[in-house]
Length: 299
Image (tube, rainbow, N blue to C red; front, side, top):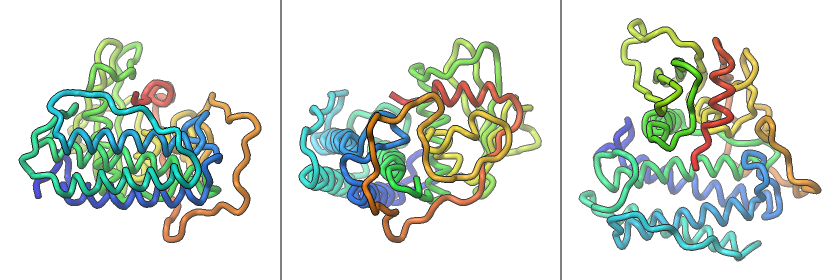
């Protein structure tokens, strides 16, 4: 199978959709529908399941019909408890089946550049589901688990070069700034040019010696960078200088937890998952990192 525009094959992304979606369900079942989701302030696990179910079914409809122009998804379900979890699992299984059965020459609506429609949807749903897997795991005591380094690097590439390359990105700086992102385990390296009037312009760094001087640099293992840039880890690396290590998940700076919420007694991380290891280090202008944290949310 062809690649999806990054370094991974379509088959790799399809495996990631399946694996991450199953892990999301396992974490949601362990936490319970009323557990708060610290990475999405104001949400409970039921809100996360309802949202992700809607996205999965919308993507499935786009691929299966196939739709050649944008159509909004159906309203989120009002199911709850075990019925909601079963509904989520059904929608996830349907998405995986649809993507695996889709022809390589599929033509349907997409919203980011990609070698093909199938390549786009495989990649986008791999990261949609992986990020929401981290959200579900944030409802457990240990916080988000590890992300495969190759998948994480691919997701950073999609986030920086494509999602934030759109006019809808809200990341703007008062003047020209350069953010550099370096994955110390995979060797992937990006330069992101920020300005007051244009969306971020990111490019890969193939020859580090030729890279421009950066105002701010984030460096660390790919999976921690991935979760940090998606604001799925504590705000530490995007606020103060110095390293931050994953110590469980907390709400982003400035957010509040829902009043009166409690974590289900005895909830634990699903078997077989592991916490991220290592640290993300921020050097240079902390204002650039703070601005990214506050304005980089994808709507």
